[in-house]
Length: 401
Image 1 (tube, rainbow, N blue to C red):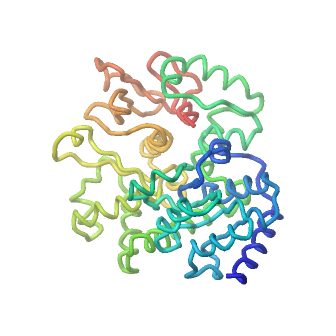
Image 2 (spheres, helix red, strand yellow):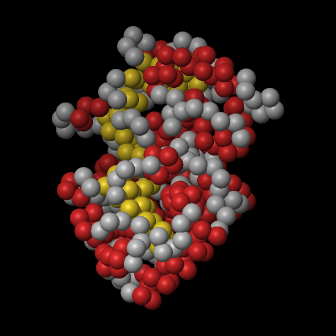
């Protein structure tokens, strides 16, 4: 254990000496200042979980004897006992531990529960979105924060240095004209729609800013790792079935959302309906797809197709040979609203948000006819800087977080 602690301290020195982005994600203060002993950050690959933890570690400005960073995908930590390691560190006066890739530790929840019960340590840990805290007794002990991809608002801040406050959905619905006008007039040299097109192509992941030319290559590799490493490990999926899950992702890529009936997809992928639903759940938990059901399925079994979207428009750009404009628009809307809101769909309208608001998503020539006569129904319109009435600019929904 002494040898392992030496390795961990060296890794901590290396991590704290590395340059990290100055920009702090919107969850930074909440995570850093959480009063819980155990603070978890989960999210898809590449969204900035490790960076956020290193930013907190560097701000603490403590020596490795007091604040330690370990990465569970490092060979030195293969097969180690997490609790015994942390027990040893606490006995030597350690106060903070930052654990990256915790989902690689077998039965990590039990180890963390023991830390909570027996050790005087503050633990920050990160893991794949596929990590599922399935025991309520464990979950009560943790403060868990889901870190999503960059919002359009955050992308603008990183691209231009201009800061904006996040908006609630009610803000957007009630005051979108004034809000959009205020945002649009802030820019002197760049158009909001130009920035929006950039965001849809490459703005959802912070690592784009590190090496723009390698972005698509890195994103495709990240998706491959999420399936072949994270999903395979967490759900004991054998290599043959990993290929089937990848095939499902490609099927979603080449299809329009409403074409994806469970029967058709199961046939295309070559699995049973029960297995397909299992794979859909895995991909959803890994933040690779968004699964939207018809609102009637909340109450009864009905033969309505489910809508399946890639988790964000950057994935469309990286994985799909062609990006159908309508699918891209709906994917963006689903990506940004699903973080804070419940999504279903209805027969009239593309999305039913929080069982209250109906949204039809379309281009600038989209009319209200499809949702005419429906209460709380709105258009999310692409290609316009400022909307009017029930026509809300699609880009503005990117300010929800």
